[in-house]
Image (cartoon, rainbow, N blue to C red; front, side, top):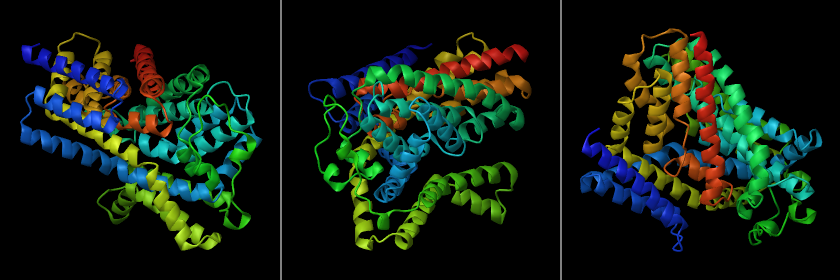
Length: 481
C-alpha cells in the first residue's frame, strides 16, 4: 500500500475516535453537531477541497434524509394515528394473551422476517416500532421479564430486518451483486434463505435472551413510547421514567382511548400491511414484469418506500375519518405532535449521512478497497471483507455491496453455486460493524433511548453477528460448490 493509503486509514481511525470522544466526553456534544464537526475535520485532513467538502456535507445529509427522513416522518405519523386509536395496544394485548413471554421474541422475529422481505431496514423498523413498544410496555407493566423488554423484543427485529436487507434478493444490494456476478436468481434465493434462517435465530432471539438482562436499564423516551402505544396524555406530559425507578405501575400504562375513537384492529393491521404489500408488489414487478410497461411502472412507483408509506398513512387517515369520532383538528394535532419526538432523530440521521458522504468523496473508501484487494484470501472471505470495510467507511450497506461486487467480479468465472454464495457473503459483509456513520445505528440508538455503549451492544453487535454467521454459513455451503 502507498503512503497516501496509510494516511487515509490513519485519518479514518482518528475520526472515529474523535467522534466517540466528543459524544461521550464531559462536553456531551450532541451527536448531530459531533458528526458534522468530525465530517468537516475528516474531509480537510484527507485533502478534500473546501468547496467540494461543503457539497459533500449537503449531498450526504440531504440524500440520507431523502431516503430515510421522509419515510421516517410518514411512519411516525402512521404510528401515532394507530396508537391514538388504541389499535397497537389492542394488538399487543392479543399477542400477550395468546403467548408466553418466552415466545414473544420469536413472534417478533417471524413478523420482522416477513416484513423485511420487501422493506429496507429502516422502513421495516419504523413499521415494527409501534408493535415492539406496545408489547414491551405491557411486559414491563406485568413484571417478571429479565432485563429490558424493549431490548428483548427489539434485537430480534434488528437481526431479521438487517439479514434480509443485506443477504437476500430482492433488496437492491443483493440484486446488484447477483447481476454483477451472473448468479442465478432462484439458486441465490434458496442459498440466501438457507443462510438467513439460522443466522436470524442466533443473532435474534438467542442473543436477545442473553443481552436483555445485561441492558436492564434501557428504556425509550416516555414521549416516544406514549406516541407509539397510545398512552394517555397525562402520561405523555410526565417526565421520562427513571431507569432505576422500576417498571411503571398498572395505572400509568392505561390508555384513555374510548370505544368510539378506536380503529378496529383488523383495519389497523391492514394500514400497516398496505406499505408492505405495495413494496412486495414492486419486487414482483421488478423480477417478473417489464418495468417499462404501464403496470410495471405503476407498481414500481407505488412500491417506492416513500410512496408506500404515504399510501399507508392515507389509508389510516381515511379509516380514522370514517371509523372514529375524532375531529380533523384532533387528528392534525396528533400528526404535528408525532414529528416533535423524531426531530432529533432526523437531524442525527442527516449528520450520519454527511459523515458518510465525506468518507466516500475524500477517497477513504477507495483506500480501504485497495488495501483489501492486495490481501491473498479465499474469494468468499475476500468479498465479505471488502464489503465489510467499505460499508464501515461509507456508512452504506448498498455501497459496500456494489463496490465489493465490482472488485470481486473479475475473480469469478460466473454462475453456479459459488456465485450465489458470493452474493450472500458480500451482503453479509456489508452488514458488519454497523456503527456511528450508519443511519440505522442512530435510528436504533435514539428510538430505544440508548447511550452509545448500549447501542453498540445491540445494533453493532447484532449486525456483526449477522455478518459473521452469514459468512460462516456461506463457507459451510461452499464445501458443496
